[in-house]
Image (cartoon, rainbow, N blue to C red):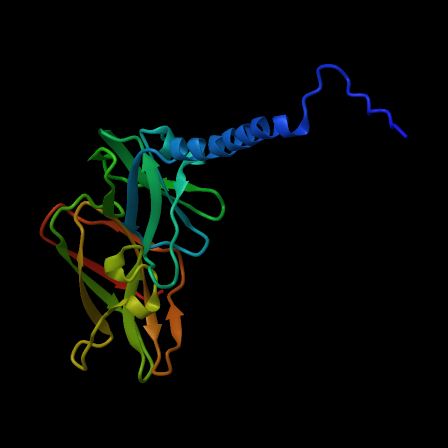
Length: 243
């Protein structure tokens, strides 16, 4: 008995002939995302670090002269991150256009959305080619020599309590009570307390006094943060009373 051959429509390729074409198409498809990824990661790797004290809910960001930094638009600024181990240092890893002058500045954004820029002139740095670089900065500081700040405060304390000062600069502990600057007193001058810290010149400073008990209890003074601006050189003396 003879069986009829199945009908094969004219122009249809055999399945085995289609296999090389399918493989070539798949390889091309897989290569496209990889090529795109390489293009997206081209640039100069920049590791940004800035030391800045913040209050609860604040975010530290950076903006500058390139689109990658938001082109000076606070809404498009790049956020930096920190944690309990690295605070008050905030950092970010970026890819920026190579081989050009970069100007930039840091800003703080409160939980309510208020924005505060650094009060110094724009920072400026020349980025190398494809090799990476690290920018290590301090809020509102451009590298001048520190000056001596003398904190004088009148405060009554209970037995075992001591007075400290902290603030938004790393030199004052960046609002961390465990890193606050201690003040001292004596029977001859009590309730006058005095403490010394090296602070950057020409810098806006926010600070506040706190008391620590022998059991580790911390009591901050009432009222808003105190504020001052350090002079260009010399010694700065501050005279305050506990609130």
